[in-house]
Figure 1 (cartoon, rainbow over the protein chains, first blue to last red):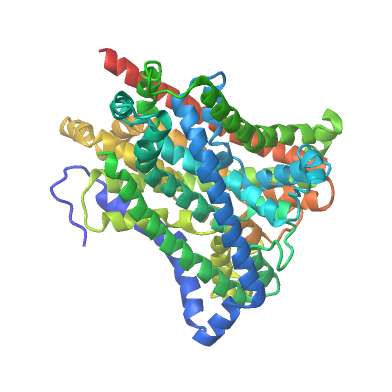
Figure 2 (figure 1 turned 30 degrees about the vertical axis):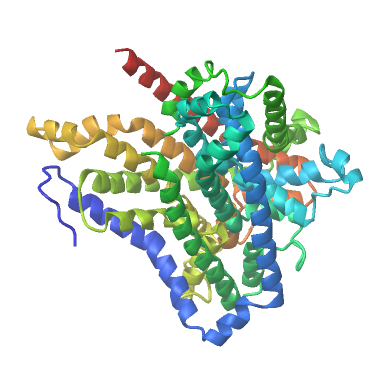
Amino acid sequence: MLDKRHNPLPGFGLTMGFTLFYLTALVLIPFAGLIIRTLGMTWGDFWHLATTDRALAAYRMTFGASLAAAAANAVFGSLLAWVLVRYDFPGRRLVDAMVDFPFALPTAVAGLTLANLFAANGWLGQFLVPWGIKGAFTPLGVVIALTFVGLPFVVRTLQPVLENLEPEIEEAAATLGSSRLRTFLTILAPTLFPAVLTGFALAFARAVGEFGSIVFISGNLPFKTEIAPYLIIMRLEEYDYSGAIALAVVLLCFSFLFLGAINMLEQWSGRFQR
Amino acid sequence: MAGALPKRNAASNVQSRRGTEESPFVKWVLISIAMSFCLVFLFVPLVNVFAQALTKGLGYYWTSLTHPDSWAAIKLTLLVGAICVPLNVVFGLAAAWAIAKFEFRGKSLLITLIDLPFSVSPVVAGLMFVVLFGLQGFFGRWLNEHEIRIIFAVPGIILATVFVTFPFVARELIPVMQSTGSEQEQAAMTLGASGWQTFWHVTLPSVKWGLLYGVILCNARAMGEFGAVSVVSGHITGLTDTMPLRVEKLYNEYNAPAAFALASLLALLALLTLVVKTFMEWRQARRYERAQHH
């Protein structure tokens, strides 16, 4: 299966062998274990376990909140990317560097600080709660946590596309008498849309699997703020392996379908780059 | 990293955009909205970590960090990082060497498989190891008879963390090695260097920054991992609690200042990661500028 094609460098056998061994031991075997356990269930059992009322409520929470958070990131992330690339203002470099902060911060810390901020006596909660905006133990809290976690995705996918835009196109539009708004809507927006969509999809995919940042702020109330990954842990604590596996397989299938979609999106959004 | 190169170009033609610029008012409004968003979602959460950690003063901060159970969590987290990062570095170097220096069929499949752990929810990752090694798992009975503990013990934590951080180093190294090509290594070999000498003196120096970045990312994620570790650890205080798990436990025990004290260490780690990343982008941009002058 593997042909070396006249490369004088040594070490192909060694490095390839180790790579395949390590990959099999740590990734493929765990995957296979999960798949074998799933195949051991009858379709009826699987369907029953994967679609209990509590599971359906958890999917709704997971996917709904992820969608809302990814949408918020699409709007504010695009704006942030635009501002960072096009305008110069004090602190721009600092903000640019800080965009990656949610990537670097352990999710448990993110959850902890957000839960504290949006609680009734927290720095932000004391102003928001009297207005009826409750972050702690509500679906809104889940959306807030997921927005934080997904923040870098739209900004970082859109930034390089904005930087590589040719200024001549906008200049031509301006010379031909197009207003700034019209140039934006008819020229810039269609060019940037695929990148925004890719960022949106990446943020959404990340949010669906997210766990650490949510458990602190959501309160994990069944049928209200419980997310699918948390329900998997609940099933495991009840020693209900099959129940946990059924939920996990649903999440996994979704991840892979979505991964394929993102790959296609990235090819589509890259079509202006080369 | 890739975004760093063209950025300087873009900044220089921002100045001459008359007629294609928004009015100062629109500009000001857009900047204010974007910055308010950053304030609420980036800066306030960060400052809050340190402010809450110090609400009861430095003395309490120090006592909560040196509490035996928290101290055990810090040591366990360092141990997990110290095992997982070298493992993934060796794997990353091997995988990058095989993928970047050689042509073979199935390469893109291999890259997809290496990226696989990124698309798995951490909780599901933890579950996979419970299915293999847990009491009702495939090897559960055998392990139990031989009194080997993997789940609810340190080996499980390490396995789950390696899984979650699996692609980080390889992902940084593969593009760097691909872009440097293999001419230099071939020249070294022609001049009589052995394979190992070539690797140590030619390849490693040329990828050192990418490697460093991969290590930093992998380490930050390894020490901060929560979901996967939460499933396999069993939460035994003083034994299998890593720092993030200890943070959760303290928070649930209504000891928020102690939870934030421990969390502040992890936040410092995140800031350090950002500083290294920013420094490397700055270095790369400067090299790019210099190359353009010559």
